[in-house]
Image (cartoon, rainbow, N blue to C red; front, side, top):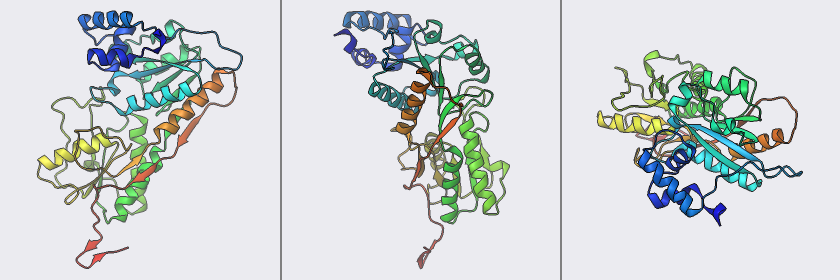
Length: 348
Protein backbone atom coordinates (compact mmCIF):
# COMPACT_ATOMS: atom_id res chain seq x y z
CA UNK A 1 0.00 0.00 0.00
CA UNK A 2 1.19 3.53 -0.75
CA UNK A 3 1.14 4.72 2.82
CA UNK A 4 3.64 1.99 3.77
CA UNK A 5 6.30 3.58 1.57
CA UNK A 6 8.77 5.58 3.68
CA UNK A 7 11.39 8.17 2.82
CA UNK A 8 14.01 5.61 3.87
CA UNK A 9 12.68 3.15 1.24
CA UNK A 10 13.18 5.71 -1.52
CA UNK A 11 16.62 6.67 -0.17
CA UNK A 12 17.77 3.03 -0.10
CA UNK A 13 16.88 2.47 -3.76
CA UNK A 14 18.84 5.53 -4.89
CA UNK A 15 21.69 5.11 -2.38
CA UNK A 16 21.20 8.60 -0.94
CA UNK A 17 20.39 9.86 2.55
CA UNK A 18 16.87 10.24 3.92
CA UNK A 19 17.66 13.94 4.39
CA UNK A 20 18.30 14.26 0.63
CA UNK A 21 14.96 12.61 -0.16
CA UNK A 22 13.17 14.88 2.31
CA UNK A 23 14.74 17.99 0.76
CA UNK A 24 13.90 16.88 -2.79
CA UNK A 25 10.25 16.13 -2.08
CA UNK A 26 9.69 19.30 -0.06
CA UNK A 27 11.26 21.58 -2.69
CA UNK A 28 14.21 22.62 -0.54
CA UNK A 29 17.63 23.57 -1.88
CA UNK A 30 20.74 21.41 -1.53
CA UNK A 31 19.74 18.76 -4.10
CA UNK A 32 20.70 18.80 -7.79
CA UNK A 33 17.81 19.07 -10.25
CA UNK A 34 18.77 15.74 -11.79
CA UNK A 35 18.64 13.97 -8.43
CA UNK A 36 15.46 15.82 -7.46
CA UNK A 37 13.70 14.51 -10.58
CA UNK A 38 14.95 10.97 -9.94
CA UNK A 39 13.65 11.10 -6.37
CA UNK A 40 10.27 12.52 -7.39
CA UNK A 41 9.93 9.97 -10.18
CA UNK A 42 10.76 7.05 -7.93
CA UNK A 43 8.46 8.35 -5.18
CA UNK A 44 5.58 8.49 -7.66
CA UNK A 45 6.44 5.06 -9.04
CA UNK A 46 6.51 3.53 -5.54
CA UNK A 47 3.25 5.22 -4.58
CA UNK A 48 4.68 7.41 -1.83
CA UNK A 49 2.16 9.81 -0.31
CA UNK A 50 3.21 12.56 2.15
CA UNK A 51 1.12 12.78 5.32
CA UNK A 52 -1.90 15.01 4.79
CA UNK A 53 -3.65 17.06 7.42
CA UNK A 54 -6.44 14.95 8.88
CA UNK A 55 -9.51 15.74 10.89
CA UNK A 56 -8.76 15.00 14.51
CA UNK A 57 -10.92 12.42 16.25
CA UNK A 58 -12.43 13.27 19.61
CA UNK A 59 -9.87 11.18 21.51
CA UNK A 60 -7.10 13.51 20.31
CA UNK A 61 -5.18 10.87 18.35
CA UNK A 62 -4.06 11.38 14.78
CA UNK A 63 -2.27 14.71 15.28
CA UNK A 64 0.22 15.82 12.64
CA UNK A 65 3.44 16.86 14.37
CA UNK A 66 5.86 19.01 12.39
CA UNK A 67 9.58 18.73 13.13
CA UNK A 68 12.10 21.36 12.01
CA UNK A 69 15.89 20.88 12.13
CA UNK A 70 18.53 23.23 10.72
CA UNK A 71 20.70 21.59 8.07
CA UNK A 72 23.83 22.68 9.94
CA UNK A 73 23.04 20.00 12.53
CA UNK A 74 22.96 17.27 9.88
CA UNK A 75 25.78 15.97 7.70
CA UNK A 76 26.71 12.95 5.62
CA UNK A 77 27.02 10.84 8.75
CA UNK A 78 24.13 9.94 11.02
CA UNK A 79 24.11 12.78 13.55
CA UNK A 80 23.03 13.21 17.15
CA UNK A 81 20.00 15.25 16.06
CA UNK A 82 19.05 12.75 13.37
CA UNK A 83 18.98 10.12 16.12
CA UNK A 84 16.85 12.47 18.24
CA UNK A 85 14.41 12.93 15.36
CA UNK A 86 14.12 9.16 15.00
CA UNK A 87 13.14 8.92 18.67
CA UNK A 88 10.55 11.68 18.17
CA UNK A 89 9.10 9.87 15.15
CA UNK A 90 8.99 6.55 17.01
CA UNK A 91 7.38 8.16 20.03
CA UNK A 92 4.78 9.88 17.86
CA UNK A 93 3.79 6.61 16.23
CA UNK A 94 3.26 5.10 19.68
CA UNK A 95 0.74 7.90 20.33
CA UNK A 96 -0.94 7.30 16.93
CA UNK A 97 0.39 10.62 15.64
CA UNK A 98 2.26 11.44 12.43
CA UNK A 99 5.52 13.36 12.03
CA UNK A 100 6.51 15.55 9.10
CA UNK A 101 10.16 16.58 8.89
CA UNK A 102 11.46 19.79 7.31
CA UNK A 103 15.19 20.44 6.97
CA UNK A 104 15.80 24.18 7.24
CA UNK A 105 18.58 25.33 4.94
CA UNK A 106 20.92 28.23 5.68
CA UNK A 107 19.40 30.53 3.08
CA UNK A 108 15.88 30.09 4.46
CA UNK A 109 17.13 30.74 7.96
CA UNK A 110 19.06 33.85 6.92
CA UNK A 111 16.20 35.22 4.82
CA UNK A 112 13.65 34.32 7.52
CA UNK A 113 11.53 32.19 5.22
CA UNK A 114 8.76 30.56 7.22
CA UNK A 115 8.84 26.71 7.28
CA UNK A 116 6.57 25.28 4.59
CA UNK A 117 4.93 23.06 7.19
CA UNK A 118 3.52 26.20 8.78
CA UNK A 119 2.81 28.13 5.59
CA UNK A 120 0.78 25.25 4.16
CA UNK A 121 -0.99 24.61 7.46
CA UNK A 122 -0.02 20.95 7.47
CA UNK A 123 0.60 20.45 11.17
CA UNK A 124 -1.24 20.69 14.48
CA UNK A 125 1.91 21.29 16.51
CA UNK A 126 5.63 21.89 15.99
CA UNK A 127 8.84 20.56 17.55
CA UNK A 128 12.07 22.42 16.76
CA UNK A 129 15.15 20.27 17.37
CA UNK A 130 18.31 22.30 17.98
CA UNK A 131 18.74 26.05 18.37
CA UNK A 132 17.90 28.26 15.38
CA UNK A 133 19.17 31.80 14.76
CA UNK A 134 17.61 34.23 17.24
CA UNK A 135 15.85 36.41 14.67
CA UNK A 136 14.46 33.38 12.85
CA UNK A 137 13.22 31.80 16.06
CA UNK A 138 11.65 35.12 17.08
CA UNK A 139 9.80 35.26 13.75
CA UNK A 140 8.34 31.80 14.33
CA UNK A 141 7.36 32.65 17.89
CA UNK A 142 5.55 35.79 16.78
CA UNK A 143 3.63 34.22 13.90
CA UNK A 144 3.04 30.57 14.83
CA UNK A 145 -0.59 29.55 15.35
CA UNK A 146 -0.02 26.04 16.65
CA UNK A 147 1.64 24.81 19.88
CA UNK A 148 5.44 24.73 19.89
CA UNK A 149 7.98 22.72 21.89
CA UNK A 150 11.74 23.35 21.69
CA UNK A 151 13.81 20.18 22.02
CA UNK A 152 17.41 20.24 23.29
CA UNK A 153 17.40 24.03 23.62
CA UNK A 154 15.32 26.83 25.11
CA UNK A 155 14.34 30.23 23.77
CA UNK A 156 15.84 32.80 26.14
CA UNK A 157 13.80 35.66 24.64
CA UNK A 158 10.33 34.12 24.71
CA UNK A 159 8.34 32.08 27.20
CA UNK A 160 8.15 28.68 25.55
CA UNK A 161 7.84 24.98 26.34
CA UNK A 162 11.24 23.31 26.12
CA UNK A 163 12.80 19.95 26.95
CA UNK A 164 16.55 19.89 27.55
CA UNK A 165 19.20 17.68 29.11
CA UNK A 166 20.86 18.69 32.36
CA UNK A 167 23.68 20.61 30.66
CA UNK A 168 24.86 22.51 33.73
CA UNK A 169 24.93 19.70 36.28
CA UNK A 170 26.09 17.11 33.75
CA UNK A 171 29.29 19.03 32.94
CA UNK A 172 29.69 19.86 36.62
CA UNK A 173 29.75 16.11 37.37
CA UNK A 174 32.20 15.41 34.55
CA UNK A 175 34.60 18.13 35.72
CA UNK A 176 34.33 16.89 39.30
CA UNK A 177 35.24 13.43 38.02
CA UNK A 178 38.44 14.88 36.56
CA UNK A 179 39.29 16.42 39.94
CA UNK A 180 38.62 13.06 41.61
CA UNK A 181 41.13 11.53 39.19
CA UNK A 182 43.75 14.01 40.40
CA UNK A 183 43.47 16.65 37.65
CA UNK A 184 43.65 20.31 38.68
CA UNK A 185 44.68 21.83 35.34
CA UNK A 186 41.49 21.47 33.29
CA UNK A 187 40.49 23.31 30.11
CA UNK A 188 37.11 23.66 28.42
CA UNK A 189 36.47 23.17 24.70
CA UNK A 190 33.38 24.78 23.19
CA UNK A 191 32.44 28.00 21.39
CA UNK A 192 30.73 30.01 24.11
CA UNK A 193 27.37 31.63 23.34
CA UNK A 194 26.96 29.70 20.10
CA UNK A 195 24.26 27.61 21.77
CA UNK A 196 22.72 27.69 25.22
CA UNK A 197 23.84 24.12 25.89
CA UNK A 198 27.51 24.88 25.19
CA UNK A 199 27.36 27.88 27.49
CA UNK A 200 25.40 26.10 30.24
CA UNK A 201 27.94 23.28 30.19
CA UNK A 202 30.72 25.86 30.50
CA UNK A 203 29.15 27.25 33.66
CA UNK A 204 28.92 23.74 35.11
CA UNK A 205 32.65 23.46 34.43
CA UNK A 206 33.21 26.85 36.11
CA UNK A 207 31.29 25.80 39.24
CA UNK A 208 33.44 22.69 39.64
CA UNK A 209 36.64 24.74 39.23
CA UNK A 210 35.46 27.31 41.75
CA UNK A 211 34.61 24.68 44.34
CA UNK A 212 38.10 23.20 44.00
CA UNK A 213 39.86 26.54 44.39
CA UNK A 214 40.79 26.89 40.74
CA UNK A 215 40.32 29.88 38.43
CA UNK A 216 39.24 29.78 34.81
CA UNK A 217 42.16 30.46 32.50
CA UNK A 218 41.14 32.23 29.31
CA UNK A 219 43.82 30.45 27.29
CA UNK A 220 42.33 27.10 28.38
CA UNK A 221 38.86 27.93 27.02
CA UNK A 222 39.06 26.90 23.36
CA UNK A 223 36.56 27.38 20.52
CA UNK A 224 35.52 24.25 18.65
CA UNK A 225 33.64 25.70 15.65
CA UNK A 226 33.04 28.82 13.59
CA UNK A 227 30.98 31.18 15.74
CA UNK A 228 28.93 32.47 12.79
CA UNK A 229 28.13 29.29 10.88
CA UNK A 230 28.41 26.63 13.57
CA UNK A 231 30.50 24.49 11.22
CA UNK A 232 34.03 23.21 11.70
CA UNK A 233 35.10 24.02 8.15
CA UNK A 234 38.11 22.58 6.38
CA UNK A 235 41.17 24.32 7.74
CA UNK A 236 39.66 24.97 11.17
CA UNK A 237 42.25 24.62 13.93
CA UNK A 238 41.90 24.36 17.68
CA UNK A 239 43.95 27.18 19.20
CA UNK A 240 45.88 25.13 21.72
CA UNK A 241 47.65 27.02 24.55
CA UNK A 242 51.41 27.11 25.00
CA UNK A 243 51.06 25.62 28.48
CA UNK A 244 48.76 22.63 28.16
CA UNK A 245 46.37 21.46 30.90
CA UNK A 246 46.30 17.81 31.94
CA UNK A 247 42.67 17.44 30.90
CA UNK A 248 40.02 18.95 28.63
CA UNK A 249 36.27 18.97 29.28
CA UNK A 250 34.63 19.08 25.84
CA UNK A 251 31.09 20.31 25.17
CA UNK A 252 30.24 17.22 23.10
CA UNK A 253 31.67 13.84 22.14
CA UNK A 254 32.23 14.81 18.50
CA UNK A 255 34.46 17.68 19.61
CA UNK A 256 36.18 15.37 22.11
CA UNK A 257 36.86 12.80 19.39
CA UNK A 258 38.19 15.33 16.88
CA UNK A 259 40.37 16.98 19.55
CA UNK A 260 41.76 13.59 20.58
CA UNK A 261 42.97 12.92 17.04
CA UNK A 262 44.40 16.46 16.75
CA UNK A 263 46.36 15.98 19.98
CA UNK A 264 47.67 12.62 18.81
CA UNK A 265 48.94 14.15 15.56
CA UNK A 266 50.77 16.77 17.62
CA UNK A 267 52.51 14.05 19.63
CA UNK A 268 50.33 13.96 22.75
CA UNK A 269 49.06 10.66 24.09
CA UNK A 270 45.44 10.42 25.24
CA UNK A 271 44.91 9.74 28.08
CA UNK A 272 48.55 9.23 29.16
CA UNK A 273 49.51 12.89 28.59
CA UNK A 274 46.12 14.60 28.36
CA UNK A 275 42.74 13.27 29.50
CA UNK A 276 39.50 14.02 27.66
CA UNK A 277 35.83 13.97 28.63
CA UNK A 278 32.90 14.64 26.30
CA UNK A 279 29.14 14.98 26.47
CA UNK A 280 26.12 13.25 24.80
CA UNK A 281 27.42 9.64 24.60
CA UNK A 282 27.24 9.98 20.85
CA UNK A 283 30.26 9.50 18.61
CA UNK A 284 29.75 8.18 15.09
CA UNK A 285 32.27 5.67 13.66
CA UNK A 286 35.51 6.98 12.24
CA UNK A 287 35.89 10.10 14.37
CA UNK A 288 38.06 8.57 17.07
CA UNK A 289 39.22 5.07 18.04
CA UNK A 290 39.22 5.87 21.77
CA UNK A 291 36.18 5.34 23.99
CA UNK A 292 35.38 8.78 25.46
CA UNK A 293 34.26 9.23 29.09
CA UNK A 294 31.02 11.17 28.77
CA UNK A 295 27.65 12.26 30.14
CA UNK A 296 24.93 10.26 28.41
CA UNK A 297 21.94 12.28 27.23
CA UNK A 298 18.66 10.38 27.62
CA UNK A 299 17.45 11.05 24.07
CA UNK A 300 14.51 8.69 24.26
CA UNK A 301 13.11 10.24 27.43
CA UNK A 302 13.60 13.76 26.07
CA UNK A 303 11.73 12.88 22.88
CA UNK A 304 8.94 11.17 24.82
CA UNK A 305 8.45 14.13 27.15
CA UNK A 306 8.47 16.60 24.24
CA UNK A 307 5.74 14.64 22.46
CA UNK A 308 3.66 14.31 25.62
CA UNK A 309 3.95 18.03 26.30
CA UNK A 310 3.00 18.91 22.72
CA UNK A 311 0.01 16.54 22.67
CA UNK A 312 -1.36 18.15 25.81
CA UNK A 313 -1.02 21.58 24.22
CA UNK A 314 -2.67 20.43 21.00
CA UNK A 315 -5.51 18.98 23.06
CA UNK A 316 -6.10 22.43 24.55
CA UNK A 317 -4.45 22.10 27.95
CA UNK A 318 -3.68 25.50 29.44
CA UNK A 319 -0.77 25.73 31.89
CA UNK A 320 2.38 27.78 32.46
CA UNK A 321 5.00 27.23 29.82
CA UNK A 322 8.44 26.26 31.02
CA UNK A 323 11.63 24.25 30.71
CA UNK A 324 11.73 20.54 31.55
CA UNK A 325 15.21 19.22 32.43
CA UNK A 326 15.92 15.52 31.83
CA UNK A 327 18.74 13.98 33.85
CA UNK A 328 21.40 11.81 32.23
CA UNK A 329 24.32 9.84 33.67
CA UNK A 330 28.12 9.68 33.56
CA UNK A 331 29.68 6.80 31.62
CA UNK A 332 33.31 6.05 32.52
CA UNK A 333 35.36 4.82 29.57
CA UNK A 334 39.00 4.98 28.41
CA UNK A 335 39.87 8.65 27.98
CA UNK A 336 40.76 9.70 31.54
CA UNK A 337 44.02 8.90 33.34
CA UNK A 338 43.96 8.56 37.12
CA UNK A 339 46.73 10.87 38.34
CA UNK A 340 46.29 9.70 41.94
CA UNK A 341 47.98 6.43 40.93
CA UNK A 342 51.64 6.03 41.83
CA UNK A 343 54.16 3.24 42.12
CA UNK A 344 52.44 1.92 45.26
CA UNK A 345 49.02 1.81 43.63
CA UNK A 346 46.00 4.13 43.59
CA UNK A 347 44.35 6.00 46.38
CA UNK A 348 40.73 5.01 46.86
